[in-house]
Amino acid sequence: MKSVLVAAMTALVVSLLGTPAVVKLFRRRGYGQEIREDGPSSHATKRGTPTMGGTVIILATLLGYGVAHLLVLDQRGRGPTASALLVLGLMTGLGVVGFLDDFIKIRKQRSLGLTATAKFAGQLLVGGGFAVGALQFRNAAGLTPASTSLSFVRDYPGITLGTVGFVVFAYFLVSGWSNAVNLTDGLDGLASGTSVMVFASYVVIAFWQFGNSCSRLPVGATDAALRAYQQTCYSSRDPLDVALVAAAVMGACFGFLWWNASPAKIFMGDTGSLSLGGALAGIAIVTRTELLLVVLGGLFVIETLSVIIQIGFFKATKRRVFNMAPIHHHFELAGWVENTVIVRFWIVAGLAVAFGLGVFYAEFLSAGPLA
Image (cartoon, rainbow, N blue to C red):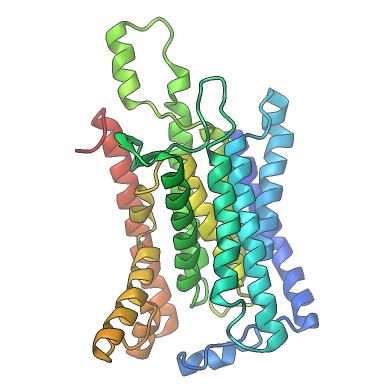
């Protein structure tokens, strides 16, 4: 537990103290945000606010994870693990894609950066590389960072995707969640605040998996007790190290939120939103909770569905369901003050996280997969 606290606190301090320096640097270089021309008129005042703040989140996460290892885990003979390094690599790789997108927006003074094809190619390269790597690095117990089985709270027995199927599935998860966080990042602090809650839930989940790992079978227990334990234990390869990653990202987002809250001094940009979405997908995959993330990240799902519904309905009828999509803009145009939208959406995000953790724990108590 000490290592988890060190990772979170280090990332928090780096992000909290480092963001103002980045704000000053980006202001001097003119790295300001371009605003959607069809967006709410109240957002016009945000034009020129420094963006690409996701660079701070990524750096703080990497430092938090590294310091926790140097000060705690490495001293106990536990070096970095494949699961954690793959998630960090996925997060950083998508951050690079997002950085290029943000940089093109700034250089060309427009609200659109990389073309859809270029962004797709970047996500495919990074997400596909993560998926392939997650099926390698088998440990002494025969576990790889990811499983080819479909998972909710743990692997569903008998529902196997196969190697190719898993790689395709993992890519869609990575692409989908990175874009979901990107769509949510439209109001000051909305995406970063929601991310804090979801990553916090994964600190709890991964640490719980560590305490109830199948590699920690009780010594001297009866056969009946062992069978009961095997029904409730978790087969994640490196749960403690994944908890460190989740804690580091949570701390980094918390520190960044101090400066990203309304009125924002800096935006995370695609650099931050794509990397955070990728980290969520990666952690879900290595903890065997891909489908549970749909519950935990309920707000991100709602935001994405609102865009899909808006586009689909407009193409079919030439009419709109919402005033504007994503849905947070709908409520702005309906007359809600921006801070009201943010706080109420945070409440929705918190309820989704609480419900998801409840489902996770209820499944544990039921001593088997959900029916």
